[in-house]
Amino acid sequence: MVKPTLLLTGNTLLLEEIEDVLQEKREVALAPEAIERMSSSRKFVENLVRDGRVVYGITTGFGKFSDVVIPKKEALILQENLIKSHACGVGAPLTKGIVRAIMLLRANALAKGFSGIRVETVQFLLQFLNRGIHPVIPEQGSLGASGDLAPLAHMVLPMLGLGEVEYKGRILPAREALAKEHLHPIQLTEKEGLALINGTQAMAGIAAYAWKKINDLLLLADLIAALSVEALHGIPTAYHPLIQDVRPHPGQRETAENLLIFLEGSKEVSKPGERRVQDAYSLRCIPQVHGASKAAFRHFSEILQVEINSATDNPLIFPEAGEVISGGNFHGQPLGLIGDYMAIALSELADISERRIERLVNPALSGLPPFLTRHGGLHSGMMIAQYVAASLVSENKILSHPASVDSIPSSANQEDHVSMGTTAMRKLLQVMENLTHVLAIEAIVAAQGVEFGGKRLGKWTSRLYQALRKKIPPLEEDRILHEDILKVVEMIKGEEIPLPEKVPAV
Image (tube, rainbow, N blue to C red; front, side):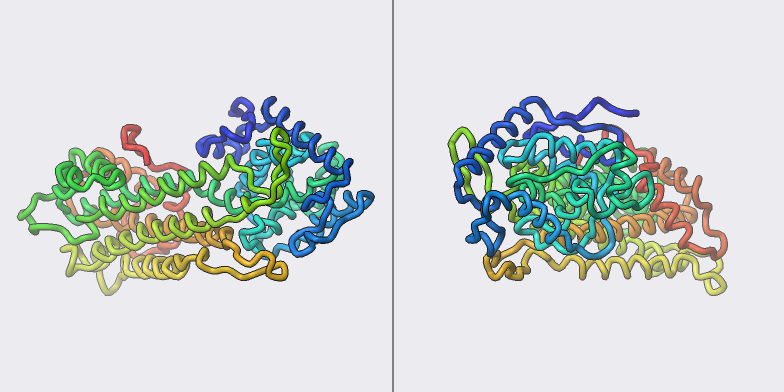
C-alpha cells in the first residue's frame, strides 16, 4: 500500500519514516518551505558568481586546489569534472535499500536551503528515488571526511547520464534507464557538484538502513533468551522489578519487563533452591547485558536523528546573514563513533547468546542430553551449531575494533584528520548480520532443548516455539542444519516471529 507523499523540509524527517521509503511504499517531494529556502540560497550563489567573488568550491578548485581560482567560463566544467574524478569507489555495490537511504538523506540535507543548489536538481534526484532508478554505488572508498565523496559521486553520475543504475531488477547504463523513464541528463551549475557529494549521507544512509533492523533484533534477543531460560529451567526471580528499581537503567528495566512478559504462565521455569540457588550469568544477567545494548541503541538513535536533518556540505550559504562560510560539517566523527559503539553493543548480544547456546548443548551445564540428541555418538545433534555461533562471535570481536580511532591524511595533508565513519557503518552491517545468525541458532537450539521438558511454556515463548516448529521440525536424527538456520534467519528478517504490542519500546 502506497502511503501519502513524504514532504522533505530538511528539518523534520524521522527515523521511523525512512523504512517506508526504503521499501518503495512512499514517494518523496520537497516541501514548499524547503523550495523557498533553496531558491533564496541559489540566488545568493548566482550573485556571488556574477560579482566574481572568490569562494571555495564555487569559483575555486577543491581540497588542496582551494587556492586555484577557476575562470567563470569554466565553472560548469569544474562541477562535472568533480563528479567524474571523485567517482572512483571500489568493492561490491551497496544494496538497493542503502542506496535509497543515501538518496533520501542527501535530498533532505539539501532541502534545508544552505547549499546553494537549484531546486530542480534536487527534484531530479527525487525522481530517481520515486521511479526506482538506483545508482550503482561501490561500498568502499570513503574516508568519512570531506564527507562521503566517492560514494556520493557515484550517486550523482547517473544524473549526468553516466555510470550504471539498478532499474527494475537489472543493471543498466544510466542513459538507457533514463530513456525508459523519458528523463534527460542534467548539467550541473556552480556549486552543485560539491553540494551533492560533500556530506555524510553514505554513512548516515547505512545507519538509517540498519536502524529498524537493530531495533527489531534487540527485542527478538529478549524473546529468544526467554525460550533458553525455559529450556534450562532458569530462575526468573532475577528479573524481579525490585532488582531493577535499585539500578534503574532504562534498558535493564525494559529487558527485565520483557522477560517477565514473555515467560508469563510458564511452568518450565524454577524457583531459587528448586534446581539451583541461582543461575549462571548468561541467564541471570540478561537484563544487565541486553539492557546495556539498548542504551547504546538509544545513543545511536539520538545522534542519527540529529544527523539526518543536518546540513553537512561545505561551504554553507546563509543568505539572510549575507555569508558564505567554510566549515567542517562534512566530518563524520559523530557517526563513526556511534557506528563503532553500536557494533560493540551488538557483538555483546551475540556473545551472551552464544554462551546460552553452549550451556544448552553441554550436558555438564544443562542437565539435558549431550548436544540435544537422543542418540549421541551416532548423531552429533546440535554440536556444530554451537561451533558456528562461536565462529561468528569471534569474527564480531575482530569487527568491533573501532574504525573511528584511525585516520589517514589526504589531499596533500589539507584533510589531515578523517573519521573513517563509513568503514565503521559497513562493519556494523556485518556484525548485525552475524548477530542475526547467532540468534537464529539460539532459537533453534532452545526450541530443541524444550523438547526434553514438559513444553509448558509461557504465553509468548509458546508462540515463538510454535512459529519455529511451522518451519523446522524437532531434531530426531541428524540433518543439514544449515537449512534450518537459513529458515529462521528468514523468519527474523521477514518479521514472522510474533511479539506482543505491550512490550516496552526500545
